[in-house]
Length: 169
Image 1 (spheres, rainbow, N blue to C red):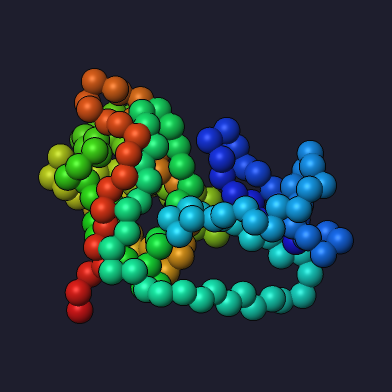
Image 2: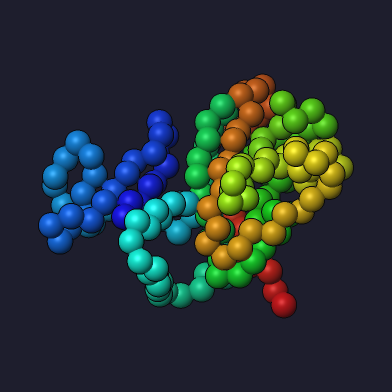
């Protein structure tokens, strides 16, 4: 089995061997590596079916990391509920919206066979790049997705954190 974590330069692959988590390039125990709640990960199971259980408290709000201009980051829906992009990504602060997808910040989700990319237009609508249609895609609890930041530093985009509140029922 492998656990893949996105770093600023690519995937870091962890595997469990000799009763400890290791990564390529070192045999040192990596069990104390912290995976933050907003970080995404990919678990590749090579054996029989496995059930994973996670425990903890449900946050009422979190801060999500946004990489700097021209950077990307794999994060996850940190809430234990399905949330649409419009509730999960604060596009009012530190986010580039545009009617031109090449100028906008983007989100990419894995469909099971390919990445599906979304951006926010100037009307605050999430657009599915594959279909060209308005699509406020819903992310499952803990579902991982990429954030691709525009490389246009003239728009005030900066590395930072945005606060996300859990929606009230």
